[in-house]
Image (cartoon, rainbow, N blue to C red):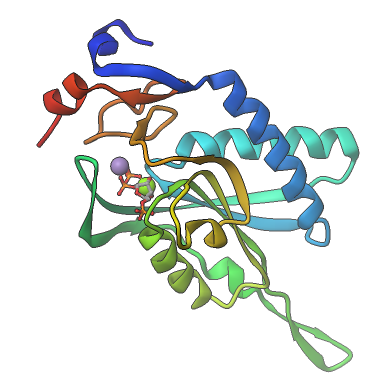
Length: 209
Ligand code: PRP
Ligand code: MG
Ligand code: MN
């Protein structure tokens, strides 16, 4: 990892290569489940989800090309923020969102019968921790009445109650560590690491606000 983070990282938790293998596997499952759709919306949750989303969409493309079952992905972004230091705060902010109206589909007419062709959405999120962010987002997405909603979470915290049930495609189930890298941050630091890492005490102190 970059020299300037040296003391701030305790260990590499999941190396980049392992992440990529897993993302490819998830892309395969997604291709199977969305086989009835020729195009879907991929909704990337910023900022943490940007690398996972980019790699996932790339694998969906490669697998589609190799199998001749091409799944067209229309990528939209939504920016949600609630964390300060390593704590979820009360306030979840929707800082910005792309246009999700594609999900409602268009009104079609055949032989004077009307149909709406609603679209499916795949939400792509870095981590489902307390689940607060995902619960709020699912509520928001449902208002667009999509055909189907699935959630891909690269990481899911292994906690007694719930988060896993919000997530259809889980990259890795992890214990209660605060992890950074591969676009996940601690107060906006560490997103530029390729590996998922655990920060050290020094790191936490240094970048605390
Ligand atoms: C983090 C993470 C998820 C969310 C998960 O986002 O990227 O979106 O928190 O936490 P939860 O399940 O406890 O709600 P954050 O607020 O740090 O914004 P960021 O993605 O821009 O870093
Ligand atoms: Mg996030
Ligand atoms: Mn964050």
